Image 1: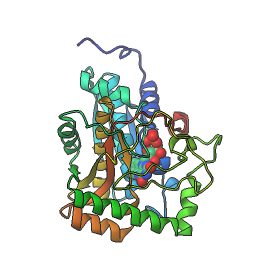
Image 2: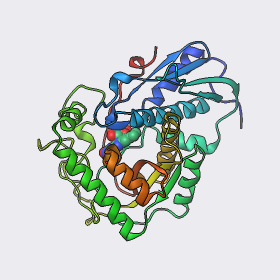
Image 3: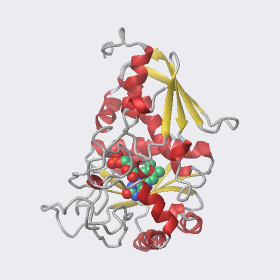
Amino acid sequence: MGEPPGLQTATADEVARQVVALAVWAPSVHNTQPWWFRAAGQEISLHADTGRHLKIADPDGREMLISCGAALFTARLALRSLGYLPRTRLLPDPSEPALLARLSWPERAAATADELRLLREVRRRRTHRGGFDAVPLPPNLLAALREAVARDGATLRIVADDGRRAALSAAVQAAETAMRLDSARLRELADWAPEPGSPRRDGVPPTSYPARAEHTSPDFPGRDFAHGRGWGLPPFSSAAWPRTAGVVGLLTTAEDSPADWVQTGQALQRMLLTASTCGVAAALNSQPLELPWLRDYVRTQLSDNAYPQLVLRLGTVIQVAASVRRAPGDVLF
Ligand SMILES: Cc1cc2nc3c(=O)[nH]c(=O)nc-3n(C[C@H](O)[C@H](O)[C@H](O)COP(=O)(O)O)c2cc1C
């Protein structure tokens, strides 16, 4: 492998700009993009933007830190693509809880082919909201995903047994029903569901969810972003019916501290990008994990007492969803 291009000329400021321009494409809960970055010499620090924290859905900031962890992984991957070996100091520091990580790049090494493959998926990957085509996942993908998340200390548990799938589906349905009856939660969700044509660069736009919910058996209902207003993408005419729920799984951790949440985010993004290299998309159904009694149910009944951090479904589907992000200049200081 030769010397990566551009290394001699990139200033620390340019590196920081390129890193953040990619990191913003990480997934985040309700596309809140709850992060900001500070560049100082050859160091970028990652901070949680607590003004973007979902106070009702996510009172402990668990999903906020998972989102930031996904941005951290993407920032590290961006440094690799520029031919640097990132050095990561993971916080949080109890005296400064919003400061999550410091990244520096003291050494060089060209990116590997695997890293470049992940990198190509950063802008292409989209969250899927609906069912999947009835085709199996590529062989060995699940093993690769298990390995991918284990690198950051998380575990991918596939919920394959029919009874357990039904129980997890029931937990998602119960959570979704409870949320649709909770006006404070609905207001918070509406704050992150911009209307069609909105110039906003955050929140979940109607270009990223179907206007008509796609049901699967068992059913994993999505969030009600449109709230009965008919927003969303029209049905995709060549979609193969009926759709399946896909391969259902849980991303879990042995402990449940803020550091575990950041690591879960890193694991999530590595997993999503790895799946995306094989044309496999993920749908996320976090609703039951936002209600303590249902999160407890999932932990004790479906994940051997490990802490569930994400409910996800994996499958193959033609995606037409489009998302938005704030400009890097809005989050880099
Ligand atoms: C911690 C976390 C929880 C999420 N939960 C859900 C969810 O319950 N339902 C959903 O449709 N998307 C969920 N998402 C996906 C985000 O809505 C999505 O990442 C964001 O809108 C940006 O879109 P993109 O992933 O297509 O780039 C979640 C993402 C994260 C990081």
